Image 1 (tube, rainbow, N blue to C red):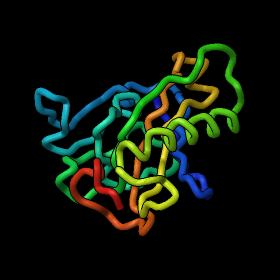
Image 2: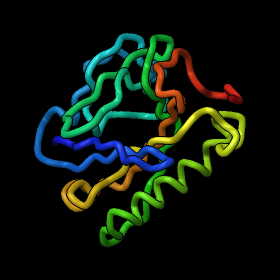
Image 3: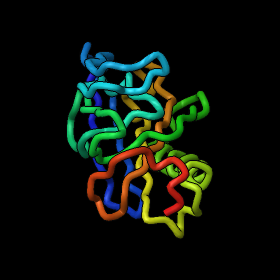
Image 4: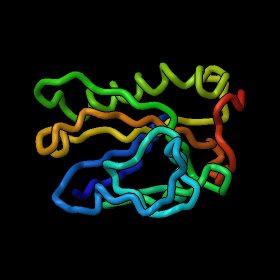
Length: 162
């Protein structure tokens, strides 16, 4: 399945991944340890991303996979939380974005160790589109953080309190 990732130009950057048919969305060419942490980078299908993954580069446009690296290496963003949106009819793009942003902000303080409004980190979210919602029952939102400076970072942002 192919997903498109587009960065919205709002205070909160939002990644959007619509589903199309492709086998690459389920690939994971990275090497992981027994805990599932990436120990050697590689391409990971859009539907195989998980909390703790560090994305090597900003992903924009139509993609089937994204490059991930160990968080100890320079990376663009880190996925820190996952939650499911309620079942039912697709509620519309703006409501999904609003729910993704609210859900990610709600977990931000606990992960970063500082209130969102005071932090030098921003939020990004991978969320279902109408196509992925209807085609594969996609309800998952993955929350990510990245430095407002837009510079690559190394290490995990967990507890960084900046």
